[in-house]
Amino acid sequence: MHPRIPIYIPLLLALPFFLSGCNRRKPAAPPVPVPQFCFTVDTLYPTSPVANQGRTSNCWAYSMASFIETENVLRSLPGDTPQFQPLSPEYMVRQKFRAQFDLSLRSGEVKLTSGALGHTALDIFRHQGAMPAEVFTENHAACPDYIKVSHRLRLLAHTAAWLPATKNRVRRSGQHLLDKEFGILPDTFSYQGKQYTSQTFAASLPALSQEYIELTSFCNYPYYTLCRLALPDNWEDATFYNLPLDSLLSVMRGALLSGYTLVWDGDVSEPTFSSRGGVAWLPSGTPTDETARLDAFLHGETTDDHMMHLVGLAHDASGARFFVAKNSIGPVGPYKGYVYLSEEYVRLKTVSVVVNKKCVESCLNIMP
Image (cartoon, rainbow, N blue to C red):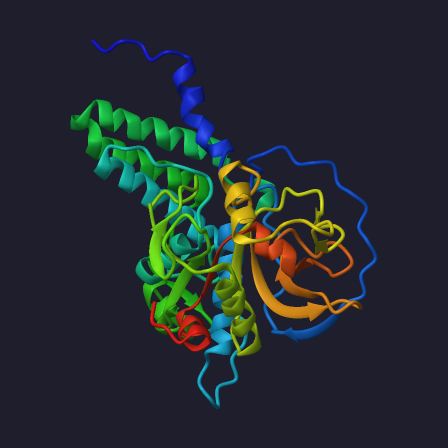
């Protein structure tokens, strides 16, 4: 007979949920008044409509869905007349929970978080495929209780670790839970007059033929090599290609000047980040060099709170440069869901970016 599980164990198991995804990992400072900016757009790529992730931690899925949707158009063949095909972020989220649960059962180490990063979405896209939003739709009015899903899957995984003989039954219970909370995934579906599976639908999209890479910049790792960042949402223990800060900014700007977009992962808990105001900046004189970046990261002042899709470049009346980010909280603020990130803010508060691998090769003349 097994001892009773202490009542505090479920609370401890649920804790990682609250520390991941788009949830803030540090208390947000009180907002400050947004200065008046007058922006001139230098480059702006057409993309799908601004979406709304609701009260979820699914920014990673929404930003990556927007990125893949845009890649499908930008990477289309000459002569094609591509249209934006909204992809289902909810499909990515469901498959992420399944992948985390399966990994936990295989390894015996429970790895269930609410959030994820760019490589999670890319792995799902390549191996589990994709679905159109109209086929597998998230309903924010009756969306899954992610806290409950994560908590229950975590308890099931721990049960399998404690009682290995129950692993098959636990696996079936986890599948049933996902079916109940998210809905049963169709084996095949009809879309625009054709029949697909999730894999054949992804194979029909130009983005699948491209190679992507996650970049970062931290001076405590060797540059031009792969490194592992200790991030709560990096549950796969994936690697990032580490570049000097100036090189990272060069790739980001170069990508947006040469027909590519990016996904940005970084800190949005600064008082000078305003989704409602549509702008993020830093006070004058704030250090943004490599040492300042590392210090802010190691002291928890820079965390991977949020992911957004970078779709353009701009400058203000003084000539200061900005990145144009497509957010996923609906068409709010003066720019209807877009946020202008100052280059200084990006230098200090970026954790990682996802970009087409060709951008690194062309901007830096290296093969990562």
